[in-house]
Length: 284
Image (tube, rainbow, N blue to C red; front, side, top):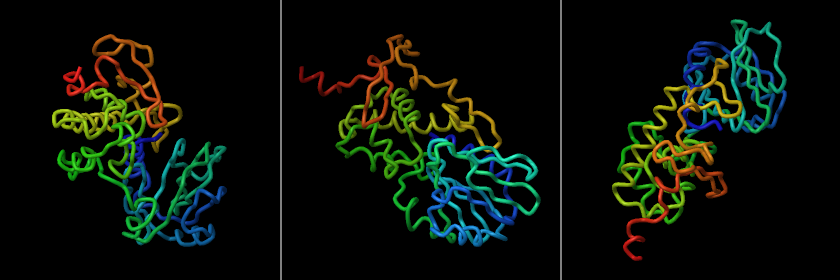
């Protein structure tokens, strides 16, 4: 957490709240969050006087685009952004504060302290980590079925870890992979290269539909996720399989099972998502 829908929701709300604001100064109380440059004073001085032009996203990363600089930010597990008046008390675990010339502040709070920030010149951020090797954007026009099939269909790995691999398709995490696989009727342990054309089409469509619905609902507020205005997402009320261990499947009524696939807790319906392919059944 957060995954693409949550980060996209943060992007949309921050875009409304900080676009056009000019940075007067920056306070950093947890230096390790700043990954680039490795000099905190340089980070602070470089940002002074720059105006935020727009807030973008690449996969699970926010791109705060300024006039001459780009800040790439990863929220990791529990990172949050919020806009406050400078007179408001600073909450515990607030590690970076961007002070604006209008008296407001963009504050980054991170209880787990896993978030990261990288500062680049425009365009440079795509030529090096952490954005260098990211894969297809599932809500982008370039995410066609043929593009999806090209990066997934020939792989000899299980489909769930393949979908979690950000070098293939970006933004998908544990929640939305489980949801998409359930919607497509595909068992999470099926091998990519065993999926037929029909199954690949179903999965492609399920990924786009699941993420689109989640974005419109503001994401899923599992654990502590909130958007840039402190509001919770609502998609968790629409989850069909994730977190529903032992509950009846919403389609067939079979109890939902949970196992570990690729090191991740995985929810699936043993009736709607069969592990055996039709090829396997013919062999018996």
